[in-house]
Image 1: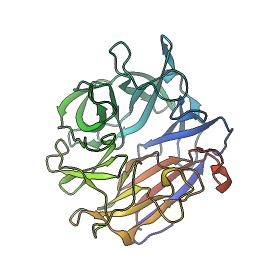
Image 2: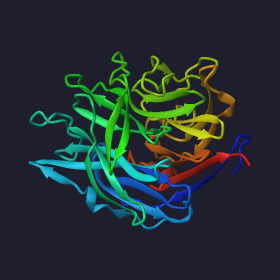
Image 3: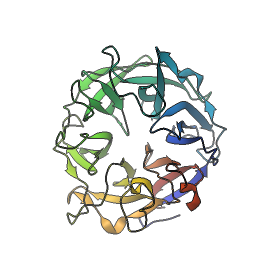
Length: 372
């Protein structure tokens, strides 16, 4: 398919819904030379954000065909007393160093109704991890703690990071400092590879909006010209801010609007960046007159061009990148690929009955590139 600014393709992968679990929170990475990995978790439908297992699929032909997903023993659940420890990991490929890796978090569960969001014996309930990847075999081989330079009750490396000129990686986190309740903040941390491990080499200044109900979270980074941009989730609205020092300090977050200053209608959902040639787009969901039946209006996923000078999205460029079939799509990932990007999302099958609109828990893979 073609737009005036970009070409894109869509694939609907791994359909199938058993009514008990559903595939959620996928991520994707590729080396641009044919090898690609796609991962996801499974969700217990009788709870809220209750996750089980981490699955991986591999492609050897640039994402055209995929192997059957395999549950990863290296990230299997463990137990701490009567608390289940589940692990999630988002895939990444570092082009400058040729390294595959995944970043994520250990999360605690007690009764399979909700995540257990309290410290246990003084230990955090959400602990960042780095996961080691064997791309040739298409599997995770193990994990280790990911160093994080702040005190926290929960710390999650999240969304799109950036590669630096020397091969370091800039990782955005959201975290809850001790005593902050569930009101999170965002910070960037720069890491260098030291063998297979990551070590901290620079620490950003936290970005906060403590006036919002749960603060800000789920960040993603992008570079446009000589600036770095950060997009953020909050309960009330999507927000963004900018950095002039390579992504360590940022301006105060402002709401996402169209270039005329009116709000885009986004709230309580992720956004991610879609770089394409010399332009930068935002992928997002928002309320429309036609998606009130979708949980939190989280479908379709739209894409619109970001105008950094005017400080907003260009309304006339908006396009539904992933269609709405009843299921929410708002938990998704974008991987930068050469001069374009890959976006992957899953049809999240809550609430019950969303399948009547055509969803079947498929994963959607969208590849965006500059128009030919």
